Image (tube, rainbow, N blue to C red; front, side, top):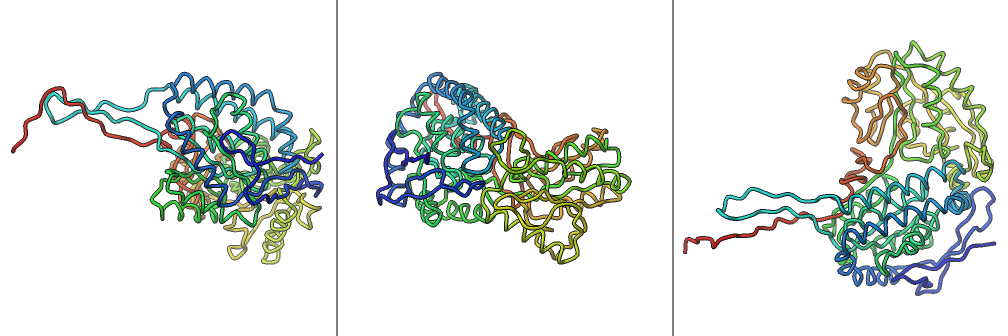
Length: 486
């Protein structure tokens, strides 16, 4: 049965002003999974109206009452794991284990946000004026525009709203057209059931052809005071430009061209397991996925043989099957894009070690290459699919140079049995995140999450997320009358 959903504005489910709808297609079956309201600029205005109207009351809610809503939402979310798994499979081809991971992490994000609500914020400052007290206080900014992507929809849908709401802001979410239920309306349903007041969170879904108009209308509204976006670097540049034009702070978590380094002292069997996860979890559709596997030349032959053998045995296909590891990409078009990257690389001299060829619908085979030349698009371009390139290095300096040879700088993994060695290498990598003794994919709600260079700026997570969506004010209190020169 096809799901039908309207926009969520001011606590109510309402159709788009235009009356238009858009289809949400299952990437594995090609069938229509849901029909949703296709919001436009006029709906964005209504959503911002609701958020602005709710702001003062929400900001005034006591920290303990606000925290209670977040804790209840976390419990509700955990109870809806099966629903989330169905939504993620139906909308974006997510496998069951990936969905359950999304739910578990997102629930803890809500709990971390709850803890941040009642954590101490602000500072007492020194003052040059005698008898004066100086304070630096954190206050909510107002309405926040949030863009939630499809690839980890429950995690990133929650992350788009948790810190802004916890800081006392109201939010208007534009969810991805590829998973508007899981990364937008489902998250809103959970928070609504937990007791979030009407208008505090609003969701405007849209048709793909209207995405640019809706995004610009949301960012440019004068009542929106901050922006957060997770997605590709190309779209992030556009959102960042809109925000800068209107003098609004933005948190941008963008694409990655992530390397996993397998150093000479690595345990090869562990490295194979770690790299397989880091590359192929969610069919490589994670901003932190390992595109490039850099292996010390002394381990290359053994690693490559064991790695390709393991990858060849990964079950693929139907995301609803509990054993599936590599499900479909988000669309057949996405699978064709990945196939073109692989074909371009091999045509220009890359060696195909495993996979390649034409996808079956949205399912692209697990693919491993080596020797990708610099003139191939895959050398610098993000694969965002079940594809990686294995290359070798002789020295740490060479490995670091290879890892840094990208405009991106999101994350990296360093597989080593020597933590001191790994730390020395990690300090030289130009990324926002690095994991020593592990692969590149990891997320924890209390940690500062974000990239460097073309992978974006600003940080989600922990106190950094609260800081990103609040304003620092300097407040002074004179305890005695001041003296003036005239």
